[in-house]
Length: 208
Image (cartoon, rainbow, N blue to C red; front, side, top):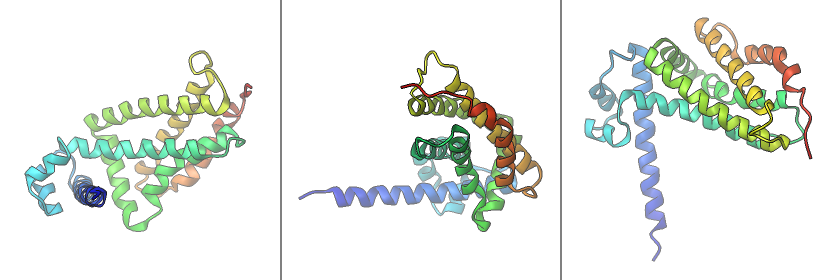
């Protein structure tokens, strides 16, 4: 007999525990600050042992790193799913809007998400990891743009420049939104940012 259902159940259970740990960690980190939270506190808040925590994450920092990885996955997936005939400025605006929507579109999560973003931007070690992830996002987005527009990724400047502009806009909006303590609407901010860079993003000729 196939054991696939059991494997699937095991995977779902593992993902559930990982989600509980992530939620507990991010909530505590956002509330108390990165240095003030211990692994023991996170494990207790999630209802698991410290040993269980280390089965999923190597450190507190790794929890935040996973949060950042999920941001990048959302951006890239949205970019790949957009219609090919869409203007690059529209495609990229929708792509970087995905993690913003995840952070702000649910009222019960918006405050915590903002505090997590503030934590990342204000903690040097976490901000350094954020910049590392942005560099990976830029490479992934550039490759996807080159594929969509039938450009040569190794010789055409456009894909990397366009990805960099989009992520710079995203970064600027995160700083502005978190710095205002959520008073400013990030969706309005991203629209304003892309209104500035759209002419450059759309000044590209497709090959083929």
